[in-house]
Amino acid sequence: MSTSPFLLSHPAKANSIKRAAMCRCEICGSPGTEDELEVHCFAGEEAPGSPEALEGSLLVLCARCHEDLHASCTSVADQEILARARRPDISKRIRRILAFRPGRYEPPDSDLEGAYTDACASKYGNLI
Ligand SMILES: [Zn+2]
Ligand SMILES: [Zn+2]
Image (cartoon, rainbow, N blue to C red; front, side):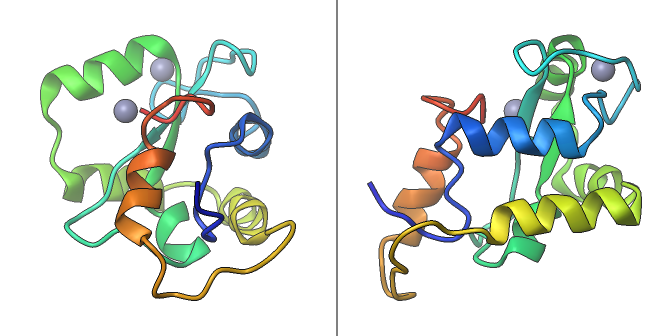
């Protein structure tokens, strides 16, 4: 397990992101609990390394919108538009959560791709 800056495999971090997004789906706006909402993670070819890049690659979604998004094969560019439409104060809060790294820092030559895959594996953090 890596502890790279964007590793979100801890549920507390995913839940903090949902709270930062006011516990609302960022597509339809419907409210949900931390258990109901999911953090969707998308990215281009490069795994994002900075909190800013990762913040631009996430969406807090209700289960229905999340399912629809995957089913519709929405392009990464369109998903980025959705992530960038987020209110600036919410973006700032999410970036702060992502930038927070308890414990030791791993140098950038660590397995970023693997860490990113882990982060998106939904094993612990609802990142799918
Ligand atoms: Zn929704
Ligand atoms: Zn997803």
